[in-house]
Image 1 (cartoon, one colour):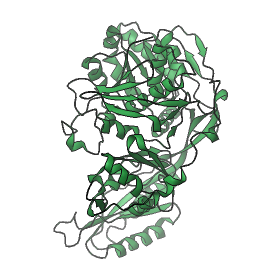
Image 2: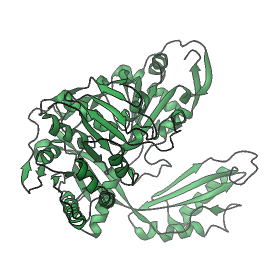
Image 3: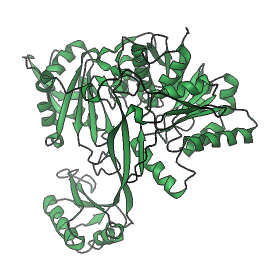
Image 4: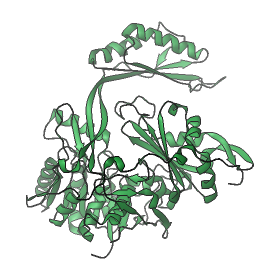
Length: 560
Protein backbone atom coordinates (compact mmCIF):
# COMPACT_ATOMS: atom_id res chain seq x y z
CA UNK A 1 0.00 0.00 0.00
CA UNK A 2 1.06 3.58 -0.56
CA UNK A 3 0.55 6.75 1.40
CA UNK A 4 1.76 7.98 4.77
CA UNK A 5 0.94 6.38 8.11
CA UNK A 6 0.76 8.97 10.89
CA UNK A 7 1.57 7.35 14.23
CA UNK A 8 1.52 9.46 17.38
CA UNK A 9 2.59 8.70 20.92
CA UNK A 10 0.76 9.75 24.09
CA UNK A 11 2.75 8.01 26.83
CA UNK A 12 6.43 7.31 27.36
CA UNK A 13 6.15 5.63 30.76
CA UNK A 14 3.66 4.63 33.46
CA UNK A 15 2.98 8.04 35.00
CA UNK A 16 3.45 10.26 31.94
CA UNK A 17 1.27 13.32 31.27
CA UNK A 18 -2.29 12.20 31.94
CA UNK A 19 -3.92 14.53 29.41
CA UNK A 20 -1.61 13.66 26.50
CA UNK A 21 -4.13 11.23 24.99
CA UNK A 22 -6.69 14.01 24.68
CA UNK A 23 -4.06 16.48 23.43
CA UNK A 24 -2.95 14.12 20.67
CA UNK A 25 -6.47 13.21 19.53
CA UNK A 26 -7.61 16.82 19.41
CA UNK A 27 -4.37 18.28 18.04
CA UNK A 28 -4.52 17.09 14.45
CA UNK A 29 -4.72 14.17 12.05
CA UNK A 30 -3.59 10.73 13.20
CA UNK A 31 -4.01 7.16 11.99
CA UNK A 32 -2.66 5.40 15.08
CA UNK A 33 -2.02 6.54 18.65
CA UNK A 34 0.37 4.54 20.79
CA UNK A 35 1.13 4.46 24.49
CA UNK A 36 4.23 2.96 26.10
CA UNK A 37 3.77 2.11 29.79
CA UNK A 38 6.36 -0.58 30.44
CA UNK A 39 9.88 -0.40 31.80
CA UNK A 40 11.94 -2.88 33.77
CA UNK A 41 10.89 -1.18 37.01
CA UNK A 42 7.23 -1.12 35.88
CA UNK A 43 7.18 -4.87 35.39
CA UNK A 44 8.31 -5.24 39.01
CA UNK A 45 5.53 -2.91 40.19
CA UNK A 46 2.92 -4.81 38.17
CA UNK A 47 4.27 -8.10 39.50
CA UNK A 48 3.76 -6.92 43.05
CA UNK A 49 0.25 -5.72 42.12
CA UNK A 50 -0.59 -9.17 40.83
CA UNK A 51 0.65 -10.83 44.00
CA UNK A 52 -2.09 -8.89 45.81
CA UNK A 53 -4.76 -9.44 43.16
CA UNK A 54 -4.40 -11.93 40.26
CA UNK A 55 -6.88 -9.85 38.21
CA UNK A 56 -4.45 -6.91 38.13
CA UNK A 57 -1.05 -6.72 36.47
CA UNK A 58 -1.89 -4.02 33.90
CA UNK A 59 -1.50 -0.21 33.88
CA UNK A 60 -4.72 0.95 35.53
CA UNK A 61 -4.07 4.59 34.60
CA UNK A 62 -4.57 3.75 30.93
CA UNK A 63 -8.19 2.79 31.56
CA UNK A 64 -8.89 6.17 33.17
CA UNK A 65 -7.22 7.94 30.25
CA UNK A 66 -9.15 5.87 27.74
CA UNK A 67 -12.48 6.64 29.40
CA UNK A 68 -12.35 10.23 28.20
CA UNK A 69 -10.87 9.44 24.77
CA UNK A 70 -12.25 6.16 23.45
CA UNK A 71 -15.34 7.70 21.83
CA UNK A 72 -13.23 10.36 20.11
CA UNK A 73 -10.75 7.80 18.79
CA UNK A 74 -13.56 5.63 17.39
CA UNK A 75 -15.30 8.61 15.78
CA UNK A 76 -12.09 9.73 14.09
CA UNK A 77 -10.91 6.28 13.07
CA UNK A 78 -7.74 6.50 15.16
CA UNK A 79 -6.58 3.05 16.21
CA UNK A 80 -4.93 2.63 19.59
CA UNK A 81 -1.94 0.38 20.29
CA UNK A 82 -0.50 0.07 23.79
CA UNK A 83 1.62 -2.22 25.92
CA UNK A 84 -0.36 -1.19 29.02
CA UNK A 85 -1.46 -4.84 29.28
CA UNK A 86 1.76 -5.49 31.18
CA UNK A 87 1.47 -8.90 32.85
CA UNK A 88 -2.22 -9.30 32.03
CA UNK A 89 -3.13 -8.18 28.49
CA UNK A 90 -6.24 -10.37 28.45
CA UNK A 91 -7.41 -8.72 31.66
CA UNK A 92 -6.94 -5.23 30.25
CA UNK A 93 -8.68 -6.19 27.01
CA UNK A 94 -11.68 -7.41 29.01
CA UNK A 95 -11.66 -4.22 31.09
CA UNK A 96 -11.68 -2.11 27.91
CA UNK A 97 -14.70 -4.07 26.68
CA UNK A 98 -16.49 -3.44 29.98
CA UNK A 99 -15.58 0.27 29.78
CA UNK A 100 -17.00 0.49 26.25
CA UNK A 101 -20.23 -1.17 27.37
CA UNK A 102 -20.58 1.33 30.19
CA UNK A 103 -20.00 4.21 27.77
CA UNK A 104 -22.44 2.80 25.22
CA UNK A 105 -19.70 2.28 22.62
CA UNK A 106 -18.88 -0.61 20.34
CA UNK A 107 -15.16 -1.39 20.26
CA UNK A 108 -13.16 -4.22 18.76
CA UNK A 109 -10.26 -5.16 21.01
CA UNK A 110 -7.39 -7.49 20.13
CA UNK A 111 -4.51 -8.46 22.34
CA UNK A 112 -1.11 -10.12 22.13
CA UNK A 113 0.12 -12.72 24.57
CA UNK A 114 2.84 -15.32 24.91
CA UNK A 115 5.55 -13.14 26.38
CA UNK A 116 5.15 -14.58 29.88
CA UNK A 117 7.68 -17.35 30.55
CA UNK A 118 7.16 -19.73 33.44
CA UNK A 119 10.02 -19.51 35.91
CA UNK A 120 9.08 -20.76 39.37
CA UNK A 121 11.89 -18.78 41.00
CA UNK A 122 10.92 -15.44 39.40
CA UNK A 123 8.34 -12.80 40.22
CA UNK A 124 8.08 -11.94 36.51
CA UNK A 125 9.79 -13.34 33.42
CA UNK A 126 8.79 -11.88 30.07
CA UNK A 127 10.23 -12.19 26.58
CA UNK A 128 10.37 -9.07 24.43
CA UNK A 129 8.07 -9.92 21.53
CA UNK A 130 8.07 -8.35 18.09
CA UNK A 131 5.52 -6.49 16.01
CA UNK A 132 3.81 -9.14 13.87
CA UNK A 133 1.25 -10.04 16.54
CA UNK A 134 0.16 -6.39 16.72
CA UNK A 135 -0.13 -6.32 12.93
CA UNK A 136 -2.29 -9.46 12.99
CA UNK A 137 -4.69 -7.85 15.47
CA UNK A 138 -4.97 -4.74 13.30
CA UNK A 139 -5.48 -6.86 10.19
CA UNK A 140 -8.23 -8.62 12.16
CA UNK A 141 -10.11 -5.34 12.55
CA UNK A 142 -9.05 -4.24 16.03
CA UNK A 143 -9.75 -0.65 17.06
CA UNK A 144 -7.59 -1.15 20.14
CA UNK A 145 -4.61 -3.50 20.47
CA UNK A 146 -3.27 -4.38 23.90
CA UNK A 147 0.04 -6.13 24.44
CA UNK A 148 2.18 -7.35 27.26
CA UNK A 149 5.97 -7.14 27.00
CA UNK A 150 6.84 -6.28 23.43
CA UNK A 151 9.77 -4.12 22.42
CA UNK A 152 8.84 -0.47 22.73
CA UNK A 153 9.43 0.12 19.02
CA UNK A 154 7.00 -2.70 18.12
CA UNK A 155 4.09 -0.41 18.99
CA UNK A 156 4.99 1.56 15.85
CA UNK A 157 6.39 -1.24 13.69
CA UNK A 158 3.19 -3.31 14.04
CA UNK A 159 0.87 -0.68 12.53
CA UNK A 160 3.39 -0.11 9.73
CA UNK A 161 3.42 -3.83 8.91
CA UNK A 162 -0.38 -3.84 8.80
CA UNK A 163 -0.56 -0.73 6.61
CA UNK A 164 2.20 -1.49 4.15
CA UNK A 165 2.04 -5.29 4.06
CA UNK A 166 5.68 -5.86 4.95
CA UNK A 167 6.91 -9.41 5.40
CA UNK A 168 9.74 -10.89 7.44
CA UNK A 169 12.24 -10.25 4.65
CA UNK A 170 11.55 -6.51 4.36
CA UNK A 171 14.44 -5.92 6.70
CA UNK A 172 15.32 -2.36 5.70
CA UNK A 173 11.72 -1.22 6.04
CA UNK A 174 11.38 -2.97 9.39
CA UNK A 175 14.62 -1.35 10.54
CA UNK A 176 13.45 2.10 9.47
CA UNK A 177 10.18 1.69 11.36
CA UNK A 178 12.14 0.42 14.37
CA UNK A 179 14.11 3.66 14.44
CA UNK A 180 10.87 5.66 14.17
CA UNK A 181 9.41 3.61 17.01
CA UNK A 182 12.48 4.10 19.16
CA UNK A 183 12.32 7.83 18.53
CA UNK A 184 8.72 8.34 19.66
CA UNK A 185 8.51 5.64 22.36
CA UNK A 186 9.63 8.05 25.10
CA UNK A 187 7.01 10.63 24.27
CA UNK A 188 8.11 14.24 24.66
CA UNK A 189 11.76 13.28 25.07
CA UNK A 190 12.18 13.59 21.27
CA UNK A 191 10.37 16.94 21.06
CA UNK A 192 12.62 18.78 23.50
CA UNK A 193 12.01 17.03 26.81
CA UNK A 194 15.19 16.42 28.83
CA UNK A 195 17.17 18.14 26.07
CA UNK A 196 20.69 19.37 26.85
CA UNK A 197 20.08 22.70 25.12
CA UNK A 198 16.56 23.27 26.48
CA UNK A 199 17.19 27.00 26.90
CA UNK A 200 17.35 27.28 23.10
CA UNK A 201 13.87 25.81 22.58
CA UNK A 202 11.14 28.26 21.49
CA UNK A 203 9.26 27.84 24.78
CA UNK A 204 12.35 27.18 26.89
CA UNK A 205 11.29 23.55 27.27
CA UNK A 206 8.19 24.56 29.27
CA UNK A 207 5.67 22.05 27.88
CA UNK A 208 6.89 20.01 24.90
CA UNK A 209 4.26 18.43 22.72
CA UNK A 210 4.10 14.71 22.03
CA UNK A 211 5.63 13.29 18.84
CA UNK A 212 4.34 11.94 15.54
CA UNK A 213 6.13 9.67 13.07
CA UNK A 214 4.97 9.93 9.46
CA UNK A 215 5.94 6.52 8.09
CA UNK A 216 6.41 5.74 4.41
CA UNK A 217 6.22 2.38 2.58
CA UNK A 218 10.02 2.08 2.37
CA UNK A 219 10.39 2.46 6.15
CA UNK A 220 11.62 6.04 6.06
CA UNK A 221 9.86 8.53 8.28
CA UNK A 222 9.46 12.16 9.17
CA UNK A 223 9.42 13.05 12.87
CA UNK A 224 7.11 15.93 13.76
CA UNK A 225 4.46 17.09 16.24
CA UNK A 226 1.07 18.77 16.16
CA UNK A 227 1.10 22.48 15.20
CA UNK A 228 1.07 24.87 18.11
CA UNK A 229 2.44 22.45 20.68
CA UNK A 230 5.55 23.24 22.71
CA UNK A 231 9.11 22.10 22.38
CA UNK A 232 10.69 21.50 18.99
CA UNK A 233 11.60 18.72 16.58
CA UNK A 234 15.13 19.32 15.29
CA UNK A 235 17.99 17.17 14.13
CA UNK A 236 19.51 17.58 17.60
CA UNK A 237 16.39 16.65 19.59
CA UNK A 238 16.04 13.57 17.39
CA UNK A 239 19.74 12.74 17.77
CA UNK A 240 19.39 12.96 21.55
CA UNK A 241 16.56 10.44 21.63
CA UNK A 242 18.22 8.15 19.11
CA UNK A 243 21.16 7.82 21.52
CA UNK A 244 18.91 6.96 24.46
CA UNK A 245 19.30 3.50 25.98
CA UNK A 246 21.18 1.96 23.06
CA UNK A 247 24.41 0.01 22.88
CA UNK A 248 26.49 -0.60 19.78
CA UNK A 249 25.58 0.23 16.18
CA UNK A 250 23.74 -3.09 15.88
CA UNK A 251 20.40 -2.50 17.66
CA UNK A 252 18.96 -5.94 18.35
CA UNK A 253 15.25 -6.57 18.03
CA UNK A 254 12.98 -9.60 17.65
CA UNK A 255 12.13 -8.82 14.00
CA UNK A 256 15.30 -7.16 12.72
CA UNK A 257 18.75 -5.99 13.72
CA UNK A 258 18.74 -2.27 13.01
CA UNK A 259 22.02 -0.68 12.00
CA UNK A 260 22.10 2.64 13.84
CA UNK A 261 25.26 3.60 11.95
CA UNK A 262 23.19 3.84 8.75
CA UNK A 263 20.62 6.31 10.07
CA UNK A 264 20.56 9.65 8.26
CA UNK A 265 18.83 12.67 9.80
CA UNK A 266 17.97 15.82 7.86
CA UNK A 267 15.82 18.87 8.51
CA UNK A 268 12.60 18.74 6.47
CA UNK A 269 11.02 22.05 7.44
CA UNK A 270 9.94 23.62 10.74
CA UNK A 271 9.54 20.90 13.41
CA UNK A 272 10.15 18.19 10.81
CA UNK A 273 13.14 15.83 10.63
CA UNK A 274 13.50 13.18 7.95
CA UNK A 275 14.87 9.80 9.06
CA UNK A 276 16.08 7.62 6.19
CA UNK A 277 18.79 5.30 4.90
CA UNK A 278 18.29 2.75 7.68
CA UNK A 279 19.50 -0.75 6.95
CA UNK A 280 18.47 -3.98 8.64
CA UNK A 281 19.84 -7.49 8.91
CA UNK A 282 18.18 -10.73 10.09
CA UNK A 283 17.20 -10.78 13.76
CA UNK A 284 18.98 -12.83 16.41
CA UNK A 285 17.81 -16.38 17.04
CA UNK A 286 16.92 -15.50 20.62
CA UNK A 287 14.60 -13.05 22.34
CA UNK A 288 15.60 -10.89 25.27
CA UNK A 289 14.05 -12.10 28.52
CA UNK A 290 13.54 -9.67 31.38
CA UNK A 291 13.41 -11.34 34.81
CA UNK A 292 12.40 -9.64 38.06
CA UNK A 293 12.81 -11.12 41.51
CA UNK A 294 12.19 -9.75 44.97
CA UNK A 295 15.67 -9.16 46.40
CA UNK A 296 14.77 -8.41 49.99
CA UNK A 297 14.05 -5.22 51.93
CA UNK A 298 15.71 -1.82 52.05
CA UNK A 299 15.70 1.32 54.13
CA UNK A 300 17.60 4.61 54.09
CA UNK A 301 18.39 7.41 56.51
CA UNK A 302 20.21 10.67 55.73
CA UNK A 303 22.32 12.60 58.25
CA UNK A 304 23.16 16.30 57.84
CA UNK A 305 26.82 17.05 58.67
CA UNK A 306 27.40 20.77 59.05
CA UNK A 307 30.58 22.81 59.30
CA UNK A 308 33.98 21.46 60.28
CA UNK A 309 35.36 17.90 60.57
CA UNK A 310 32.97 16.41 57.99
CA UNK A 311 34.97 13.18 57.41
CA UNK A 312 35.34 12.60 61.15
CA UNK A 313 31.64 13.15 61.72
CA UNK A 314 30.82 10.67 58.96
CA UNK A 315 33.24 8.13 60.46
CA UNK A 316 31.61 8.49 63.87
CA UNK A 317 28.14 7.80 62.47
CA UNK A 318 29.42 4.83 60.54
CA UNK A 319 30.92 3.25 63.61
CA UNK A 320 27.81 3.88 65.69
CA UNK A 321 25.41 2.46 63.09
CA UNK A 322 27.56 -0.61 62.47
CA UNK A 323 27.76 -1.26 66.21
CA UNK A 324 23.98 -0.93 66.55
CA UNK A 325 22.79 -3.14 63.65
CA UNK A 326 25.90 -4.93 62.32
CA UNK A 327 27.91 -4.27 59.17
CA UNK A 328 26.20 -6.65 56.74
CA UNK A 329 24.16 -4.93 54.03
CA UNK A 330 25.10 -1.39 55.06
CA UNK A 331 26.20 1.20 52.52
CA UNK A 332 27.42 4.72 53.35
CA UNK A 333 27.60 7.51 50.78
CA UNK A 334 29.00 10.91 51.75
CA UNK A 335 27.88 13.72 49.44
CA UNK A 336 30.21 16.68 49.91
CA UNK A 337 27.64 19.36 49.23
CA UNK A 338 29.23 21.65 51.84
CA UNK A 339 30.95 24.93 50.96
CA UNK A 340 33.73 26.49 53.08
CA UNK A 341 32.97 29.68 54.99
CA UNK A 342 29.26 29.43 54.10
CA UNK A 343 26.77 31.91 55.51
CA UNK A 344 23.83 29.53 55.92
CA UNK A 345 23.38 26.03 57.31
CA UNK A 346 22.39 24.34 54.07
CA UNK A 347 25.37 25.65 52.14
CA UNK A 348 27.69 24.55 54.96
CA UNK A 349 26.35 20.99 55.12
CA UNK A 350 27.23 17.63 53.62
CA UNK A 351 24.84 14.70 53.45
CA UNK A 352 25.62 11.21 54.67
CA UNK A 353 23.22 8.70 53.11
CA UNK A 354 23.04 5.38 54.95
CA UNK A 355 21.36 2.46 53.17
CA UNK A 356 20.60 -1.01 54.46
CA UNK A 357 19.49 -3.99 52.38
CA UNK A 358 18.61 -7.29 54.01
CA UNK A 359 16.44 -10.34 53.55
CA UNK A 360 15.21 -9.75 57.10
CA UNK A 361 12.45 -7.13 56.99
CA UNK A 362 12.69 -6.52 60.74
CA UNK A 363 16.42 -5.69 60.67
CA UNK A 364 16.06 -3.43 57.62
CA UNK A 365 12.97 -1.80 59.10
CA UNK A 366 12.47 -0.09 62.43
CA UNK A 367 15.53 -1.73 63.97
CA UNK A 368 17.69 0.23 61.51
CA UNK A 369 15.80 3.53 61.33
CA UNK A 370 15.31 3.68 65.11
CA UNK A 371 19.03 3.06 65.64
CA UNK A 372 19.77 6.07 63.43
CA UNK A 373 17.29 8.34 65.22
CA UNK A 374 18.60 7.29 68.65
CA UNK A 375 21.90 8.98 67.77
CA UNK A 376 20.30 12.43 67.60
CA UNK A 377 21.63 13.45 71.04
CA UNK A 378 24.57 11.06 71.24
CA UNK A 379 26.73 11.58 68.18
CA UNK A 380 28.49 14.43 66.33
CA UNK A 381 27.81 18.11 67.07
CA UNK A 382 24.84 19.47 65.14
CA UNK A 383 23.46 15.98 64.51
CA UNK A 384 20.21 16.04 62.55
CA UNK A 385 18.46 13.91 59.91
CA UNK A 386 16.34 14.69 56.87
CA UNK A 387 14.39 11.43 57.18
CA UNK A 388 11.91 10.13 59.74
CA UNK A 389 12.09 6.58 61.09
CA UNK A 390 10.15 4.19 58.89
CA UNK A 391 9.66 0.60 57.94
CA UNK A 392 11.58 -1.21 55.22
CA UNK A 393 10.23 -1.57 51.70
CA UNK A 394 10.76 -4.51 49.33
CA UNK A 395 13.11 -4.07 46.40
CA UNK A 396 13.52 -5.98 43.18
CA UNK A 397 16.46 -7.35 41.23
CA UNK A 398 16.40 -7.28 37.43
CA UNK A 399 18.38 -9.64 35.23
CA UNK A 400 18.41 -10.05 31.48
CA UNK A 401 18.42 -13.48 29.90
CA UNK A 402 17.55 -14.95 26.50
CA UNK A 403 15.21 -17.59 25.12
CA UNK A 404 15.12 -19.15 21.63
CA UNK A 405 12.71 -17.40 19.28
CA UNK A 406 10.94 -20.70 18.54
CA UNK A 407 10.44 -21.46 22.24
CA UNK A 408 7.97 -18.59 22.73
CA UNK A 409 4.28 -19.03 21.92
CA UNK A 410 3.60 -15.60 20.39
CA UNK A 411 -0.17 -15.37 19.85
CA UNK A 412 -2.47 -12.65 18.50
CA UNK A 413 -6.00 -12.87 19.90
CA UNK A 414 -8.26 -11.17 17.37
CA UNK A 415 -11.40 -9.20 18.26
CA UNK A 416 -13.61 -12.17 17.33
CA UNK A 417 -11.67 -14.42 19.71
CA UNK A 418 -9.64 -16.20 17.03
CA UNK A 419 -6.20 -17.15 18.33
CA UNK A 420 -3.59 -16.66 15.62
CA UNK A 421 -0.10 -18.08 16.30
CA UNK A 422 2.72 -15.82 15.13
CA UNK A 423 5.57 -17.96 13.81
CA UNK A 424 9.16 -16.91 14.52
CA UNK A 425 11.29 -15.52 11.69
CA UNK A 426 12.72 -18.12 9.35
CA UNK A 427 15.97 -16.22 8.80
CA UNK A 428 17.94 -15.42 11.92
CA UNK A 429 21.52 -14.81 12.94
CA UNK A 430 23.24 -16.44 15.89
CA UNK A 431 22.90 -13.99 18.76
CA UNK A 432 26.58 -14.37 19.55
CA UNK A 433 27.43 -13.06 16.07
CA UNK A 434 25.20 -9.98 16.26
CA UNK A 435 26.50 -6.69 17.55
CA UNK A 436 29.98 -7.85 18.45
CA UNK A 437 32.54 -6.06 20.60
CA UNK A 438 33.57 -2.43 20.20
CA UNK A 439 36.14 -1.83 17.51
CA UNK A 440 39.69 -1.70 18.89
CA UNK A 441 40.13 1.78 17.41
CA UNK A 442 36.98 2.90 19.18
CA UNK A 443 38.37 1.71 22.49
CA UNK A 444 41.63 3.61 22.19
CA UNK A 445 40.53 6.59 20.13
CA UNK A 446 43.02 8.68 18.18
CA UNK A 447 45.14 11.58 19.23
CA UNK A 448 45.97 14.73 17.33
CA UNK A 449 47.10 18.26 18.01
CA UNK A 450 44.00 20.44 18.40
CA UNK A 451 45.92 23.70 18.65
CA UNK A 452 45.16 26.39 21.25
CA UNK A 453 42.67 25.47 23.96
CA UNK A 454 40.57 27.23 26.59
CA UNK A 455 39.06 26.00 29.83
CA UNK A 456 35.32 25.51 29.89
CA UNK A 457 32.51 23.02 30.58
CA UNK A 458 32.38 20.21 28.02
CA UNK A 459 28.67 20.95 27.57
CA UNK A 460 29.47 24.21 25.82
CA UNK A 461 30.27 22.13 22.73
CA UNK A 462 28.38 18.85 23.06
CA UNK A 463 25.03 17.44 24.11
CA UNK A 464 24.43 14.19 25.98
CA UNK A 465 21.66 11.74 26.81
CA UNK A 466 21.98 8.89 29.31
CA UNK A 467 19.78 6.15 30.73
CA UNK A 468 19.51 2.66 32.18
CA UNK A 469 19.32 -0.88 30.89
CA UNK A 470 19.09 -3.24 33.83
CA UNK A 471 22.30 -2.85 35.82
CA UNK A 472 24.07 -1.09 32.94
CA UNK A 473 23.98 2.54 31.86
CA UNK A 474 24.45 4.12 28.47
CA UNK A 475 25.84 7.58 27.83
CA UNK A 476 25.54 9.06 24.35
CA UNK A 477 27.42 12.25 23.49
CA UNK A 478 26.95 14.19 20.26
CA UNK A 479 28.80 17.09 18.68
CA UNK A 480 26.91 20.11 17.37
CA UNK A 481 29.21 20.80 14.38
CA UNK A 482 31.47 18.84 12.07
CA UNK A 483 34.54 20.54 13.51
CA UNK A 484 33.53 19.63 17.07
CA UNK A 485 32.92 16.05 15.94
CA UNK A 486 36.44 15.73 14.61
CA UNK A 487 37.74 16.85 18.01
CA UNK A 488 35.28 14.83 20.09
CA UNK A 489 35.90 11.60 18.19
CA UNK A 490 39.61 11.78 18.92
CA UNK A 491 39.45 13.27 22.41
CA UNK A 492 36.67 11.44 24.25
CA UNK A 493 38.20 8.00 24.72
CA UNK A 494 37.36 5.43 27.38
CA UNK A 495 40.34 6.58 29.41
CA UNK A 496 39.14 10.17 29.19
CA UNK A 497 35.63 9.22 30.27
CA UNK A 498 37.01 7.36 33.29
CA UNK A 499 39.10 10.41 34.17
CA UNK A 500 36.02 12.66 34.04
CA UNK A 501 33.66 10.17 35.73
CA UNK A 502 35.79 8.36 38.33
CA UNK A 503 32.96 6.09 39.49
CA UNK A 504 33.31 4.24 36.16
CA UNK A 505 36.96 3.32 36.80
CA UNK A 506 36.38 -0.18 38.24
CA UNK A 507 33.76 -1.04 35.61
CA UNK A 508 33.83 -2.31 32.04
CA UNK A 509 33.22 0.60 29.67
CA UNK A 510 32.54 0.00 25.98
CA UNK A 511 32.74 2.77 23.40
CA UNK A 512 31.03 2.94 20.01
CA UNK A 513 31.18 5.57 17.29
CA UNK A 514 28.17 6.70 15.24
CA UNK A 515 29.65 9.08 12.65
CA UNK A 516 26.31 9.68 10.91
CA UNK A 517 25.09 11.24 14.15
CA UNK A 518 28.43 12.87 15.05
CA UNK A 519 28.20 10.86 18.25
CA UNK A 520 29.93 8.40 20.53
CA UNK A 521 28.03 6.07 22.81
CA UNK A 522 29.39 4.50 25.97
CA UNK A 523 27.92 1.45 27.69
CA UNK A 524 28.96 1.27 31.34
CA UNK A 525 28.50 -2.25 32.62
CA UNK A 526 27.27 -2.68 36.18
CA UNK A 527 27.02 1.00 37.10
CA UNK A 528 23.50 0.44 38.47
CA UNK A 529 24.29 -2.80 40.28
CA UNK A 530 21.30 -5.16 40.31
CA UNK A 531 19.07 -2.72 38.45
CA UNK A 532 17.07 0.42 39.13
CA UNK A 533 14.91 -1.01 41.92
CA UNK A 534 17.96 -2.19 43.85
CA UNK A 535 20.33 0.70 43.10
CA UNK A 536 21.31 3.07 45.90
CA UNK A 537 23.00 5.61 43.60
CA UNK A 538 21.83 9.19 44.03
CA UNK A 539 20.83 8.95 40.35
CA UNK A 540 19.59 5.33 40.26
CA UNK A 541 18.58 5.35 36.57
CA UNK A 542 21.66 7.24 35.32
CA UNK A 543 19.39 9.89 33.81
CA UNK A 544 21.70 12.70 34.94
CA UNK A 545 24.98 11.00 34.03
CA UNK A 546 25.19 12.86 30.72
CA UNK A 547 24.65 16.22 32.38
CA UNK A 548 27.34 15.41 34.94
CA UNK A 549 29.76 14.75 32.09
CA UNK A 550 28.77 17.98 30.33
CA UNK A 551 29.44 19.96 33.51
CA UNK A 552 33.09 18.86 33.77
CA UNK A 553 35.56 21.64 32.99
CA UNK A 554 38.09 20.55 30.37
CA UNK A 555 40.44 21.96 27.75
CA UNK A 556 38.22 22.91 24.82
CA UNK A 557 39.67 23.71 21.38
CA UNK A 558 39.49 27.45 20.78
CA UNK A 559 38.61 27.07 17.09
CA UNK A 560 35.52 24.97 17.72
